[in-house]
Image 1 (cartoon, rainbow, N blue to C red):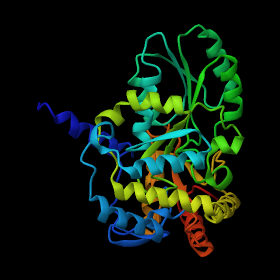
Image 2 (spheres, helix red, strand yellow):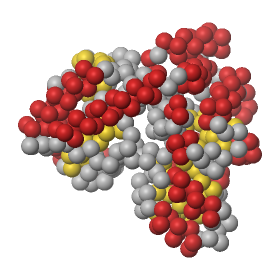
Image 3 (tube, one colour):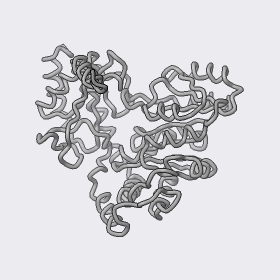
Image 4 (cartoon, rainbow, N blue to C red):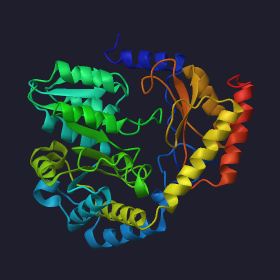
Length: 393
């Protein structure tokens, strides 16, 4: 038996269980309709909430930065890779988020890996993390030597009990997603902050799917709950509603200064390119000027989710544009996704280990780029295929 034969066995097992992920290829810019594997399809997959991924202003600013700064920074931020554009973006983001300072990094994923081990590096520290937190939070926790405590999903009473049991820890860090990416539900951040303050715990929220979606002008979940100054660390991504790539950490000047000295992705990985940073600045400027796209996103969301429920689909407990169409069986979910693709709809199935076993779903991502006729097109096909596969009556 060869030393790599386990790979063949594992791949075959994934296929038999309906868990093998078919990774399709995008051949066009992101938008309501895209080319996937040579086929024009309605895009119900991407995180392009506001349509910024192909926005003319973002492309214009990226081109200008490319001509001025070239294609890459050629260094880490802490040595010779910090451009004036990086500082402009961080200032813009701080103004937008209504916080003292921000630090921009390569992605939202690495932001969690940057913050968590730096805040809680010792075995004397305790990290309290929601059971359904994103993989990037889980990996960030694993990089720390701190004790890990998992509290039940959205259960503030369970969190409070664990805080009480660990009240004498050197440092206490409560970490939660703002919007949970698979179910679309939101953290009760106001209640989390209240109990954390009682135990003098640091509060950190990853608002990857709340940016550009929740709060005034899309400022996110902290703004949504009016908690400015009470959430210690906010993690944002620039690859979803902002349409580009990168991530950032928002907080007090003291916190950000500490992370400039301690955050390993900042210290040991090259900076984001000038073109990407310039495009991100443009995205923030658009949101500062108008909330029209945020309103359109929510109009589309309310319409689609209402009509899906009227058709008999289970859309879970979503409170956001993330719309899980619950199927249950993983193989059935993939069959549903394949039939949707055959009928010009790009909506991928999500199964274990991304979601628990038995909770496979089609995750539909609504965008401000969708027109009403696009959503009606999708609803008709979901209705027909859902009946054909016995998902709805």
